[in-house]
Length: 302
Image 1 (cartoon, rainbow, N blue to C red):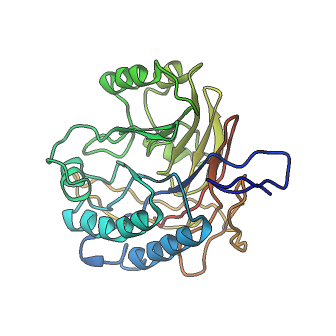
Image 2 (spheres, one colour):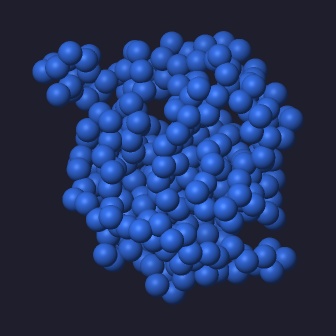
Image 3 (cartoon, rainbow, N blue to C red):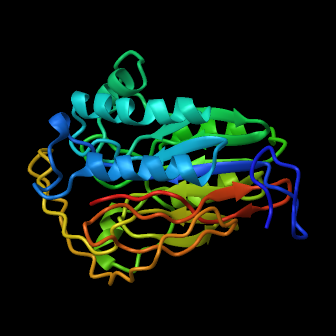
C-alpha cells in the first residue's frame, strides 16, 4: 500500500504516487436535464460519480473529462455540466481538463463551458500539474462522428512535445488510437494515426486517456499505454444526431459482468454495469516519478 498525493508513508516497495488523476468520459448531458434516449438520467448518474470522486481521493491532481460532454451540443447542457463539476473540483482543489468529442459543438463548448469567446477552432490546451504535463487534443470533426487530427494540430503537438516535462506527458483525447473488436466502429475511428504515432514515439508521452466507443479497454499505441474509458458495457444507443440526418445508434453486444466497485488501487480494477444503467467506478489513474499505472475512475452512459 502506498499513500496518495502529498503523503510520505509507504508500506510497500514503491514510493507514494506523485500525481493522481481522475478520468471520466462521455457524460452526454442534455438541455433541461432531459433523460438520454428518454431513459437514462445522466445528471443523477453523473452526480453519483462526482460523489464517488470526492470519497476516493482528497487531493487529485486534476479531473480529466474526455469528450462527448453534451449529447447534442446544446448551450444549456454545457452550463449544467459546468454547474455540476466546478463545485466538486473547487472543493478538491483540482483543475478540470475538458476535452471535445464528436457529439460536442465547439462554439457552445467554448462559450458556455469554458467561458471563452465562441469559436469553431479546435479545443486544445496544456496543463502543468506539478511537473506532469497534460495535453488535451481535439479529435472532433464538426458535423461528423469519426475522429481526426489535422496537420495544424499535429504540428502544434510536436512543438509542445519538443521539450520534455519533469514527470512526462499524458495525452487526453476523445477518439482512442486503439482498435475495436466491433467492426462497425471502424467508421468512427481516429484518422491520421500513423502521423500521430510518428510524433509521440520516443517523446515523454507516457499515457493516452480517451473515451468514445462506450466500453472500456486498454492497449498500447506507439509504445505508449492507452486507455479507453466508459461505464455501461451493454447499451443500445438510438438517437438521430440532427447533423444531416446521420444516425449513430448500434448495439455493441459486449456482455456486462457486474462486480463490486473498488477504490483507489494503483492499478485500477475492472468494474461493472449497474443495474440502473449508472456509472462505473474503476479506481484511479496515477503516476509517480518512474511509471504510469493504468486504471480510471468514472463512467458513462451511451
